[in-house]
Length: 217
Image (cartoon, rainbow, N blue to C red; front, side, top):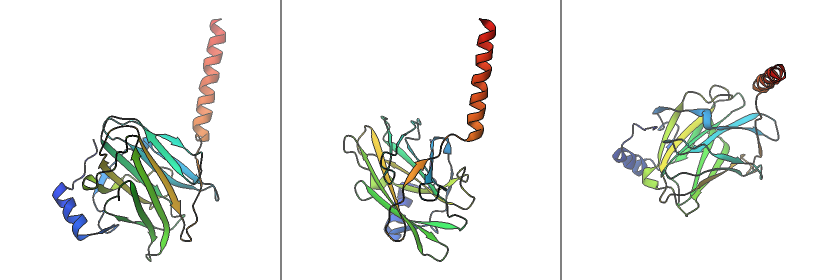
């Protein structure tokens, strides 16, 4: 199970004295597994823009991705584990970005910003997190951390943040994510398809299996 070096008491102090939890406060690197995350392309540019994951960390139950509305990404999982885990990373397209995140959600809503080195707003991220039994993220359990290693398929230096928290009730959980540019326009996404190399390998394996079947007939 992924654990934070912050204790509950330390978290309480952080939330009390740091109403905005910025990149200068999120210092603790936590080893994470990006293998259950989704890589999303910006539909407008075709750029691999975001890697995101939402699941209970122990045991891991991978999410289902729903992009029926490309501007409203939905991740859903079924689990009896109250703990939930979010990983998020966004590419700066060659520039260094930083995370500016509040300390805890307000009911089911959580927002944070992505800034450039000058502190100018680049993206606003809005999360709507809820369970099918109206379970809410428990604010006192909310922990922000710096996920390591760097997210795969995004440039080194991409802004990344992770969150651990508990739900107030147990049932299927859904996280909806919207990303807005500085003008307030919503970005739309598509899921990055299976890499060409993996597709060629799978095709070759199917071909070999087919040849083996013909030889045994």
